[in-house]
Amino acid sequence: MVNIYNLELISLSSDLLTIKVNCSSGTYIRSLAYEIGNLLGCGASIGGLKRTKIGNFKLDSSISIEDFLKVKKVKFKKSDFQSSPYMISIEKLLDKNPSFYIKDRYRCDIANGHPVDGEMVESAGAEDNNLFKKGIFVKIKDCGENIIAVHKILSENVIYDIKNKRQNLTKGIVFF
Image (cartoon, rainbow, N blue to C red):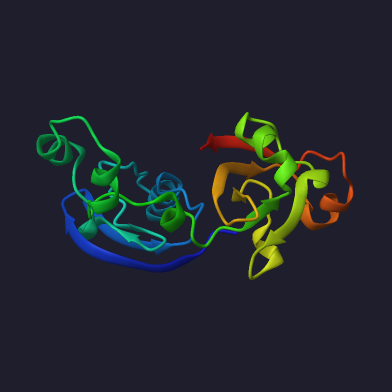
């Protein structure tokens, strides 16, 4: 479901309308512009689009790729990623996403790209089981809390399908 929480007119000049939208994930701003144009009876299209915030990440705490590359002309070292205010760890990026804890004997399988099935899952960790939705990214962790992969959930009903030991629950996206 798409929600528009706030729509603010920033400027109106001739036939150019500038608006600020605060909306839910999954909102297509181009479709919103089309609908506004239809309501006004004149049609509309997007001349520019700037995302200023997504989740906890804001534009004012970012740096352009050009500026980043000017600063980092040398080969990256692991310490560069850990100390840079512009680099975000995978843990921080996915801190709100759910986790699957994998039985130790399946760690290598996951690291080699295998999907997760119910047999591999030791436990599922999330504050809210509703976070386990199809299409959501899930952290695949070992029992020592180490992220070994990031997968996309394929199952419509993950908690139920964990019990079905043969059902593939995920598709691998990133492996560590």
